[in-house]
Image (cartoon, rainbow, N blue to C red; front, side, top):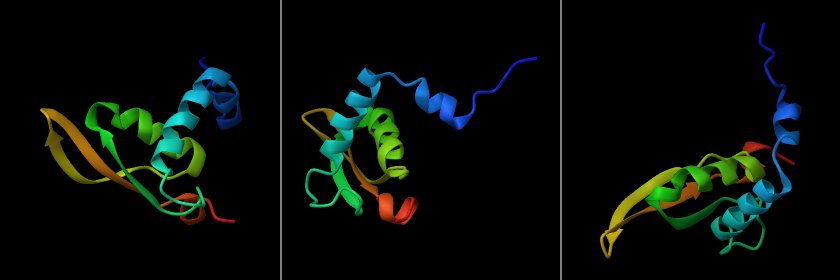
Length: 91
């Protein structure tokens, strides 16, 4: 019988390095706002969407929404939006 990890066990299993990497990504997403708990938007490389989305969910509980897709110098980018901590978690 396999044991499923609880949410707390999954959080505790994330290393300090992983959390630090998520923080760098989340700080980029929220760099243009004064309060990280507010809605935010940014432009990110499409290839890194999953990493940024994971960071957004980790810190704000807010999955990213792609609002525009474009190419620049042959590389695909996304303009993304996150509802922010207040909207997703509260307080």
